[in-house]
Amino acid sequence: MIKHARRLFLALGLAAITLFGSVATPASAEIPYFRNLLASQTKYAAMVVDAKTGEVLYAKHEDSPRYPASITKVMTLYLTFEALAAGKIHMDDPVVFSPHAAAQAPSKLGVRAGDSITVLQAIESMTTLSANDAAVAMGEKLAGTESRFAALMTLRAQELGMQNTHFSNANGLPDSRNVSTARDIAIMSRAVMRDYPQYYHFFSLEGFDFRGRQINSHNHLLGPGVDGLKTGFTNASGFNIAISGVRDNRRLIVVVLGGPTRVARDQNAEDLLLTGFDVIRRRAMGEKITVAQNLFEPELSGPVVRAPVEQGDGDQAGLTIELTSAPAAKAGKINVAESRKPAKAKKAAKARWAVQVGEFHSSKDAHRQIAFVEKRFGEKFDGATGGTDKDGRRYKAVFTGFSESDARDACRAMKAKRLACLVLEPS
Image 1: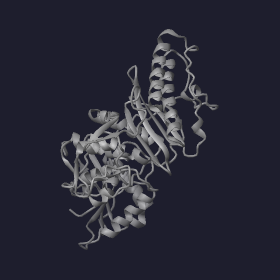
Image 2: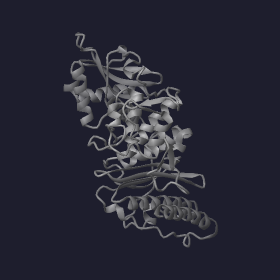
Image 3: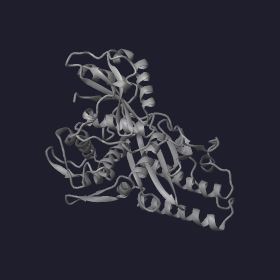
Image 4: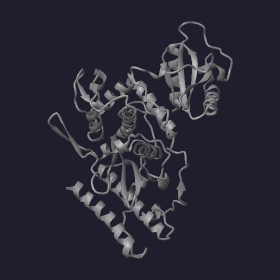
C-alpha cells in the first residue's frame, strides 16, 4: 500500500510540474517539498545529476567515502553488459555456481554449487532480488575468480572517472575495502545508461519468474516517474539507492546514501527527483534557483556546478573485459622501448609476474602513473621495470619482473591506499 501511495505521489508531482509549467507563474508553481531532514545523518550523502550533460544540480557530502552495499552490482552489471555487447558472452550462456558463489549470504537465488543459470537469469536476479550468489557467479564467469573480477571492476571505475571508489567483491556484501561516494555512484549510473542503453531496461524490472517462483524487485520506487536503477543496504552503509527518471526529455539521476530506514531513503530520493525537475523547469522560465533552496535548506548550495567534460565520459572504444579463456595477463607484450627506467627485473624464472597499475588514453598518462607509483611505492616496486602495454587505443601501465609473492605484496600496498592494481600471471 505504501509503495503504491509513493508511486501516486511521484506521478502526481511530475504531473504538477508539467501543469504548473504551462499555466502558472513561477511564484504560484511552488511545490511543497519536504525539507531534507536526512542531511544531518552521519552516513548521509546525496547527489542529483543531469544524465545527459553531467551537470550537478545538488550535492551533499558527495565526495565522502561511503559503503555502496548492493549498488556495487551496477558495476558488475556494467561489465556484464560490456561482455554481451562485445559478443564475448550471450544471454543463453550458462553461469555455473562454484562453491564460493553458492555460499554467499542472502539475498540470493539459492542455486546449489555445480548448478547453473543463464546469463539472462543472472542479470534479472541482480537487478531485482539483488542476488549475491548470482553476482559472484557472473564475476567468476567473466574473470575466473571473484578477486580478479573485483580488480577489473576497480580499474574500470577509475577509467570512468570514479576517483574515490574501490571494489573488493562483486556483490557489495560487507567489506571495509569496498568504498565509493555519491558522486562516483552517479558517474557509474550515468555511464551504464549511456554506454549500454540497450540493456538499461533490466533496471526497470519489477519482478521475474525463476523456476516457478515469482521474485519481486527490492526497488519500491519503480513505476511511473522512475525507471531504475538499484538499491542497497548493510548495517554499515545504511539504506542506499540510485534512481533515475525522465521528464520533458530531461533525465535526472538521484543518489541517496546512508538513509536510516528504507522509507526515509525513498521519500528523500523522491523529493530530490521532483525538486530537480522543478528547478530545471523554473530555471528555463528565468528563475535563479537551486535544488537546495527549493528543499528549504538553510544554507545555499552556491552556483550550479558543471561536472568536468571528461567525468564519466571515458572513451569506451578498445576497452574489453577479458574472459577466463583469454585472461588480461596474456594480452599483448610490454613495450620495452617505452620503459621509463633501466630494466632491473630479476633474471630468475620465478620473476616473471607483472602488476598492472592503470589503463589510459595516452602513453604520456601511462608513464605519469608509472612515475607516481615508483615515487609512492618505491620499496614495493624496487627491482621491477615499468613500461607501457599498448592494447588497441589504450595504454596499460605495467610493472614486470616480480615473483608471485612480491607482485601480490605490491598490489596489497596499493589497494590499501584505495588505488587500482591487478596482478598478472606469466603468459
